[in-house]
Length: 209
Image 1 (cartoon, rainbow, N blue to C red):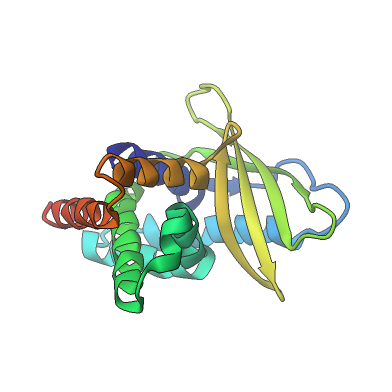
Image 2 (tube, helix red, strand yellow):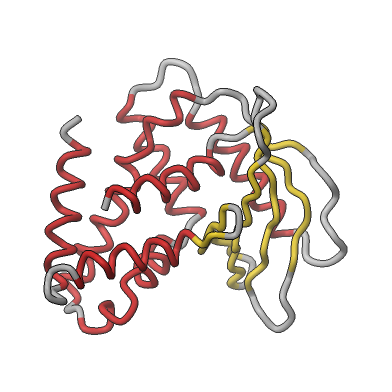
């Protein structure tokens, strides 16, 4: 569980707390996904790095942005893989709630430590015949450290854009999360409840701090 939390937190925080700059112009073709990512960054900075807001307010504001801009339900189902098919509605809803709570509780506080990194949109790729676009970006540190390549997979459902995956230096966070969730279940004789127990404990621990 710690690896999943750390990786997902770092990648999502990179999107939501970075200063969005113009960067290179996007390649000819659909531009809306790139604008969506830029606008999300700007909204996050304004809402989450404001001076004097409480931790509770920051978590509340972050949850709103998360629900608006990330397809949390789709990501949650993906990381469960085949285990998502046999859940009763009540357990499926509890899982999704815990999944979202865990994300919010893990890194909402990170926004207080914003330090002026720059987030540059390089270009947008739209694979033929697909609704998803890939927004290629770079994260440039204020101290001149190594540039980090981050690609955002953005799903377009009739003009409603949602982030469905993040790839950092080519590594998919959704796949990484799925592998770690699966490992927890397999280590416990294939019992799905073992994952739920781990999620409940982690969520409770984060909320208590």
